[in-house]
Structure formats: structure tokens, C-alpha cells
Length: 86
Image (cartoon, rainbow, N blue to C red):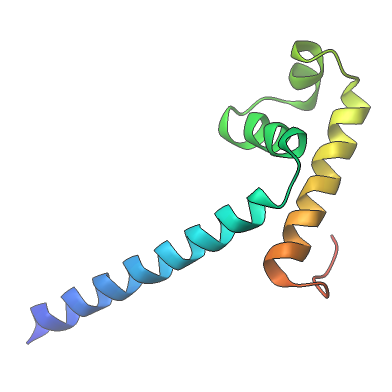
């Protein structure tokens, strides 16, 4: 009986994770390619704004602003128009 409960809990957690993953993907697709790129370089490649700026011939200030705005748009898309800004 315990194994059955554990199996159900695992299946539920995988389903929830899959739903969340799909929501995040859908929200990301609402961003421009440039915004997605900045978020990718920042979060997946772990690049600092200065590194992104140097590699892509932008200013570090511009990269930080773009990242901030992209995250805000992502938050609003994912959580709705009334998402709290940070």
C-alpha cells in the first residue's frame, strides 16, 4: 500500500512539473528572440551582463535593462497582469 501511495505521489509531482514546464515555455515564447537570448545567456550559460555585452557588442547597462524588462514581461505573462514587480 505504501508503494502505491509513493508511486501516485511521484506521478503527481511529475505531472505538476510537466505542466509548469509547459507554462514556462509558453511564457518564454511570448518574449522577443533577443529577450530570450539574454535570459538564456544569463541563466543557462551563467554569463554576467558585462560578458554578454562584450560578446554581443552591447553596453552592460543595456544588457541589465533588457534582462530586467524581459523578466518583468515573463512574470506578467506567467502570473498574470497583476504580478508584483520586484
